[in-house]
Image (cartoon, rainbow, N blue to C red; front, top):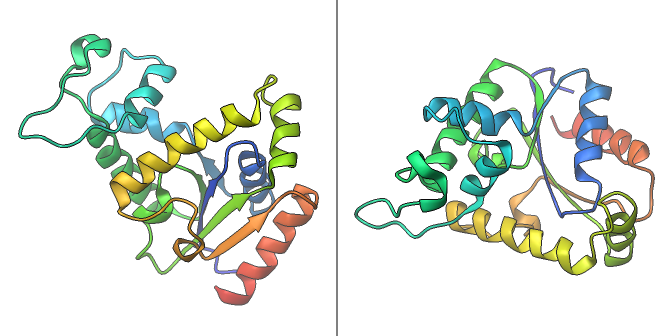
Length: 199
């Protein structure tokens, strides 16, 4: 595999995508970037007094663009910030991380941000409802399938709004993998083998 490949992983909630990204990064001996991107983007925007949960809320709240920013009253001094500002800042962070060397980037529409980069390989991870429902019970503190799907709806709205593409549409990714029937470690090996044949 090209030593400079950057892998982006998008996923359905509850399919094991985060764990798969972690396994890939470990097997390839590269960094995994996830929530760090939010904090780096916040620093670029001069935001240093919001919790991670508030930053994620700011990140995921899609507001239509107007001539002036729509205030986020719940964020106090950050009423002038918008999820658009976070998206732009995160995109800058993602490009910088990709320039710095090989890595795995989880979520944050990174597949779109890096779509024109020749060293980029994008993956979408999904699973059937039964698998996700079981993981909701076992891994996600008893979350129901309905709750998992609500999170996916939020991800889809954000992605569709900022990219103009449809979240989860196979044509947007280099590879789509279903984690329902095989161990994640085996799937990670198969992904690496596949990337070796195309990069």
